[in-house]
Amino acid sequence: SVRPRSDAIIRPDFKFEDMGVGGLDKEFTQIFRRAFASRIFPPSIIEKLGISHVKGLLLFGPPGTGKTLIARRIGTMLNAKEPKIVNGPEILSKYVGSSEENIRNLFKDAEAEYKAKGEESSLHIIIFDELDSVFKQRGSRGDGTGVGDNVVNQLLAKMDGVDQLNNILVIGMTNRRDLIDNALLRPGRFEVQVEIQLPDEHGRFQIFEIQTSKMRGNKMLSSDVDLHELAALTKNFSGAEIEGLVKSASSFAINQKVNIGKGATKINNKDIANMRVTRQNFLDA
Ligand code: ATP
Image 1 (tube, rainbow, N blue to C red):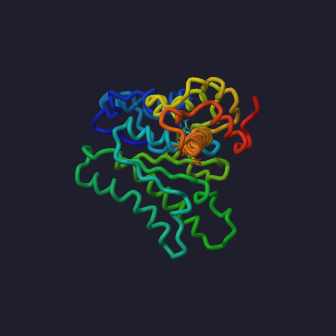
Image 2 (cartoon, rainbow, N blue to C red):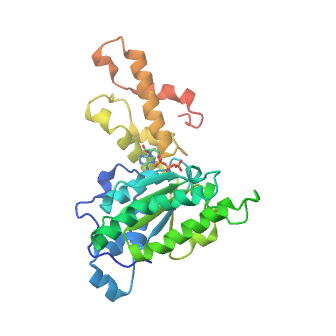
Image 3 (cartoon, protein in one colour):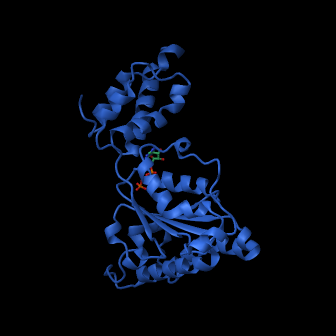
């Protein structure tokens, strides 16, 4: 729990609908209510209510569902600095003490800015992707080196220190919440945990809209492409897979039509249907 900042920090012009994230309205509302609603109010009110800010958010769920995307949008919403994104395995070093130093380095800029500007410091966001790969249950690795344990301890120490700084938010992401060291999941650490699931049909429709918005804006998508139908046909697709489908259909179309002339380069339903052969789980109509 973090002392409230001196300012209300949610951008007043922020609209989640404009953020290019499809099918995660419910999740975002949950994240907002549980982690950020308090940031709308000035600290005087927050203090009167006896509440404090959340400093650690865990997003978990299958790969490619938009966890990184939503973490970045949170940064926009909170008017934060460009987030530092680090992959779990990147932290680990075979040199003694280096992994811990890598963790400490992630917090350095925020600490320095707090030292210089105090409450006027901007908010710094640190995003840990593949959190489970490094921050496993301590003592569970069996490599006998204890390196991983030290890394967990270092992150715990850093997160506990955020109480004093209040200009840092840590967002962890994982496909395997069950593997993560319990100490990291306790109140005051990654205390708000939200599951990001595969999109339902409406969500897939929204993601198709987002992923084709540029080509639609430029009138490059043929009118025979029905995004509702595509959403129905792509059960179990993640957002990343929908993006992949749209991209591969586009390159397919361009390769096919490059010599036919400008008017013919629109992406049509056949181009997308052709991708079925390359997409194992694209259900047949
Ligand atoms: P991983 O667990 O593998 O790190 P992730 O959940 O963080 O995956 P992202 O990296 O956010 O997934 O998604 C990859 C790309 O897929 C995004 O940059 C975006 O283009 C697209 N995408 C995924 N989910 C969505 C979504 N809900 N709305 C719009 N685009 C999405």
